[in-house]
Image 1 (cartoon, rainbow, N blue to C red):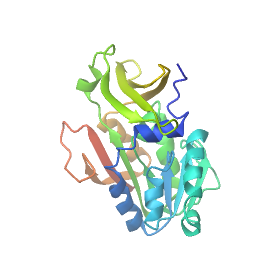
Image 2 (cartoon, one colour):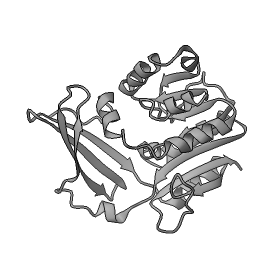
Image 3 (cartoon, rainbow, N blue to C red):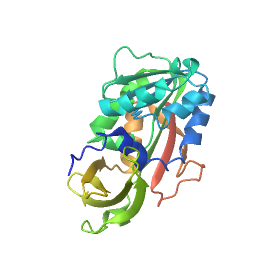
Length: 255
């Protein structure tokens, strides 16, 4: 059994999320419409970074996981020289953005539920305050988050779900994967463990701990850092939110 760090192996990460594409066109449209430099908080291996670059955008990416950035570096090396010149990435905590980042980003994105890596409201506030300080006048902050899903949290933690068979890109052999999860009420954290079983019986695991926030908690933080919601939906197609929405796709600007 290998370690549980969900970002230890960029190839395994890319395999797990290869079919997660519903947000790509959405962020590409925002990037092209921004008409200026973009900052991506939690850029990972470039799942969104590279599609934006290929559309002509200029993107600076920040991520704390060195392994993820190494995966991104290899992908950037395969781009043509013009595309390579439009992307930069930095190993940093998005709660404390590097001082050398520019202060005129027309679009700052915090995508793919990355907000849930924050352990509390203060972490969210610090991240958004840092984003606001680097936002150009009239610029937009865009993010997408989960909203609490009590039915999901009530799953039996001893059972396994989402069984799939992948082709392991590292070996070319079949890889059986499944997930388990549980809810920690005290910390309001949804734990998800992905297990990968190799043909020889070896197991790899990736453990995500996602802190959940109520919508009104996030709205209060937006107001505190001087942001207002200018557009919202429950998906990337623009479906209006309802009291039962489990996803929140948001665009914010300075209040």
